[in-house]
Image (cartoon, rainbow, N blue to C red; front, side, top):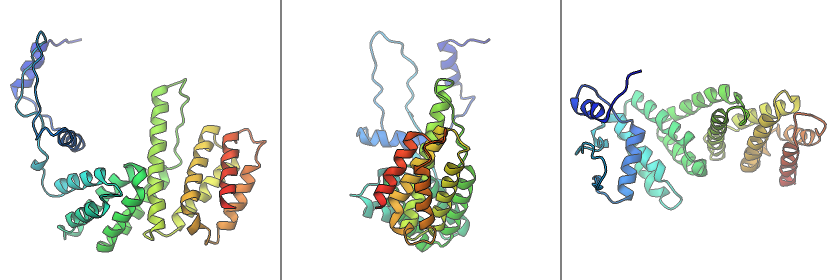
Length: 286
C-alpha cells in the first residue's frame, strides 16, 4: 500500500496537475458562515507557534459569483430559502419570485421549478407552510409548476414505502440512514400537506397516502417499527389537514379504519405505541 508524507501532499497541492471544484452546497454553507462571522469574505489564517506550518493559500474558496445562469439563480434562491422565517417572509418571497421572473424560456423555468421544489421538499419542514406559499406563488406565474409537483409526488409515492429498517444493534450506521430517510419522507409529506391546504394540490394525493397507510396497518404485513413510522405519518397528516379531509367522501372510512386499528391489540405487529397514537387521533377528532 503506497504511503504519502506531508511533503508529498504539499507538492501535489502546489503542482497544479489536478482540479477540484467545491460543490455548490458547500460553497453556500461557507459563504453563510463567513457572513455570520463578519469576515468580509476573508479567512484569518492565524499562525500558531510550535506547530506545523502548511502552505498558506490566498484563495480559501471559490466565490459563488463565478456561477452564471440557472446555477447562480438556484444558489441565490437557496440562500433565501435557508434564511426564510415568519418575520422576513414577505421580503424573501418577493426576492425569490423576482429571481424566477428573469427567465422566460420554458426549459429554464422548468429546471428552476424542479430545483426550487427539491430544495423545499428536503429543507426544514418547520417552514413547510412558508415554502408551500412561495411555490404556490411560483405556480401562479408559471402553470408548469403543477406538472413539476405532480411528477415529483409520483416518483415519491413509488419510493415512499421502501423503509429498509435495520436494527441499531446490527448496524448503527444503517439505522441512522433509516432515520434520515424517515425524516426526509416526513419533510416531503409536510410539503404535500401544505400545498394541499393552500389549494395548490387536490386533496386526492393525501387521501391516497392515508388509504395506503391504513391498508398497510390493517394487513399487518410489516414489522412493528415500520408500522410505528406509518402511524406517525398518519397522525401528522390528519392533525394538519383534518379540516379539508373531513369534507371528503372518504372521511367516514378513514375514521372507521382508525377505530379498527385502535382495537388491533392482539396483532403481534401492532405495538402499544401504535394503539395509543391512534387513540390520540380519535380523541383529537371528537
